[in-house]
Image 1 (cartoon, rainbow, N blue to C red):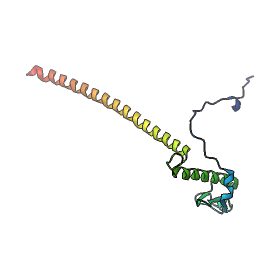
Image 2 (image 1 turned 30 degrees about the vertical axis):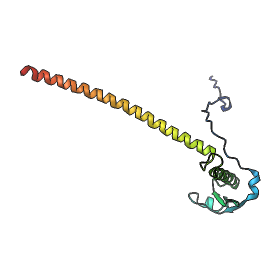
Image 3 (image 1 turned 60 degrees about the vertical axis):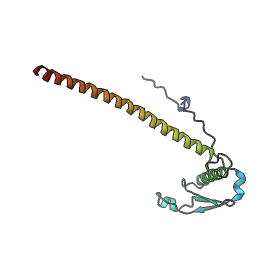
Image 4 (image 1 turned 180 degrees about the vertical axis):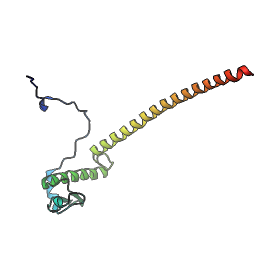
Length: 163
């Protein structure tokens, strides 16, 4: 009789690469008094009747700044409200940073860090590709030089003895 051990996923520990990013922008409950919220029917894109028969699309307007966020992340009204508030918080943070406060780049610190990380990754990829092709080009040049030397030697052997 064969006994099999059952693996339980809670016992397995995965070591993920730790990325040091600024924290995500959180929704401040104090801002609830400064917003207008509407629930809309339907939505753009796929989903058909399943989306069109529910009023799950959320539109939030921040009254002091006039920023409007419309979101239909899922069919759940609760999820859409949460996601719309996160997007609005991100936009308010970006607006705060563009007015000379914060990082002055017009985006949240996290978004700026992600953008810089993406730029570094692209630069590293380009640098590694340049190294790789430089090495390949030098190897090709060496092979060409060896081939030319063999051809010259062969020609010298053929024509050198006859002349």
